[in-house]
Image (cartoon, rainbow, N blue to C red; front, side, top):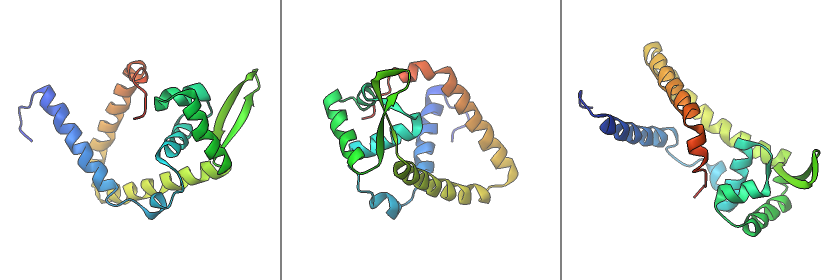
Length: 159
């Protein structure tokens, strides 16, 4: 890295390093991911519900950038696979919330744990100084995320 990079160059370099780090964390796609009996849209819905919790169908459709009918079809198939449950909203019976079933929650939690375990092996190789630097950098990213949350939520369509 050049010592006198501009802010734009630093941003680009950081993005490139992040991509390399991601590839290092996930050098091969675990067989558990490859053996999933889910289509890409179904996996997106499962991940969305895992990250955001129970959601209305309109939120799912908006997040995926698809019509309500398309999102409903994807969720229908996830319900058939016992990955997602539909429940009424106790505050408004007209609203239906989708949430992960125990089976869906266990599946995603297991995949998340695999990724976490791999990351832990990599982190344990670092000395304390590098771990402190990394912790500071991640904390700075989280703070930037909080500062830009509303702006980012306006662009939350999953492609």
